[in-house]
Image (cartoon, rainbow, N blue to C red; front, side, top):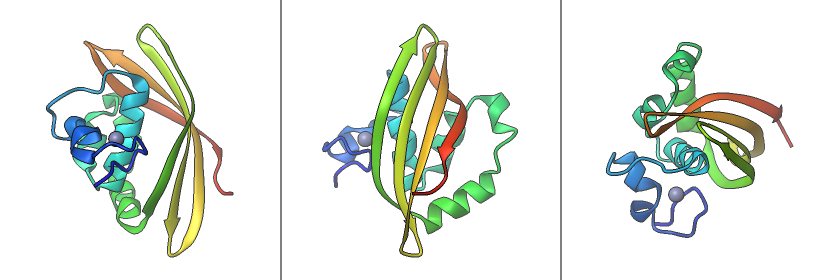
Length: 130
Ligand SMILES: [Zn+2]
């Protein structure tokens, strides 16, 4: 099976390596892609473990999971990614559908590197719908 993140690689050789904990995502972009795949694969623990603990307090995990179960993940498009030291930003569009209705989630996410590991810090939504 091809990886949901759009790499054209096999899932087990792509984001699956990060989901299983075998390796840590080496870049902010890799982490972002693997988090998209985690939504697609309903790997909620991975999403939790790669979120900054402070950010986690503000996240409704149940709502996230419910959404992940209902949505179909169609495509991920990374528009821009930047890294400066321990800070990373990734702008992306996530294409998904719910009840056959297609949506685009356009977001600029910021990431933070701590002890060699990237964490999702915050996201700013640019436009909620097509
Ligand atoms: Zn992948």
